[in-house]
Structures are given as C-alpha cells and as structure tokens.
Length: 180
Image 1 (cartoon, helix red, strand yellow):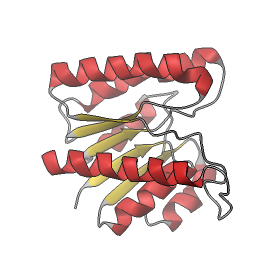
Image 2 (cartoon, one colour; image 1 turned 60 degrees about the vertical axis):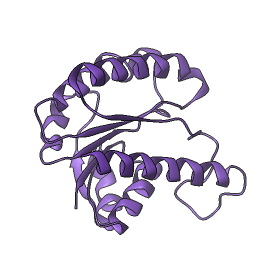
Image 3 (cartoon, one colour; image 1 turned 45 degrees about the horizontal axis):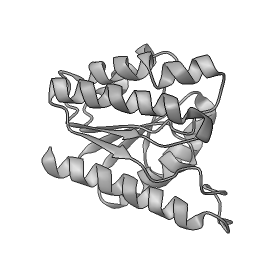
Image 4 (tube, one colour; image 1 turned 30 degrees about the horizontal axis):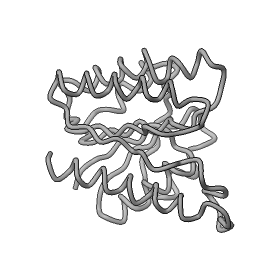
C-alpha cells in the first residue's frame, strides 16, 4: 500500500482517488476549505485543508506520501493566479518533495484552452526539476476538459474523454508506483 497525494480535490481528483482506494492505496486529497471535507471523506480518503495559493498549507500534506499529483490543468481564475499555479508555486511544490518520501510526481499537462501556454511552461519546469533531482514524473495529456458532469451520472458528451483521463491518471500513478 502506498499513499498518494492529490492536489485538487474536485470531481476528477475524487474519481481518481476512488479508483486508487479500490486498488488498496491510501489517498490524501487537498481542498481549499472545509466545504470539500465531506465528499472527500465519504470516499475513504484523508482530507487535507490546504491550497496551492499558500504552499505552506501543503507542506505537511507531503508527509508519508509516495506519489504526488498536481491536477490543476483546469484551474480557473485571474491570469496572474494561473500563471503562479503553473510557474513559481509549482516549482516550489516540486522542490518541497525533495528529501521526502515522495518517489514520483504526476503533473496534469493539459487543461483549459486558455491555459495551455502556462501549462506547457509548467511541464518544462517539472521536467527540469525532476531530471535534476532524480524524481520520476508522469505527464497527463488526456483532455480533462472534454467531459461534462464529472461528479454525476449524466455524462452524455465527453464521457469517453473523462474515462480516458481517469484511465491515464490511474495508469500514471501505477507506473510511478512500480518504480518506487
């Protein structure tokens, strides 16, 4: 059994967590506030209140984690905040994994159309830091935006995309765990 940290406890993060829990892994999911706690704990995952906007709130979340997943490809907000999520905050988060139990990092390298340039920059930064520090990394390139109704049963258009994203995410975690 390994512990997986999922940064971004929205519908996709919770669906990934459910699959990982079913596979026998412990999962810790971050959420920005107490509002997300019930949905996370209902899965059997550990809830961690913290936000990438204040990385100090995530530092303790890395304790005992084998794989960390940065799933912020579809994050929304002002351009400066998105730039920080895929730039300085991402780089600092990756450097925080050095000298911890983290043995792999999953980065969502695809997301909202308007954020693709930022995400590409984030991918380059993750690749560089991972190579320099010998941290195995996997990049999710399946389209996370093609699905509607992530949390519900109504996924008419894009349902295949959501399942493809989920399979890719679970596969990425599995590949990294096999190397850990």
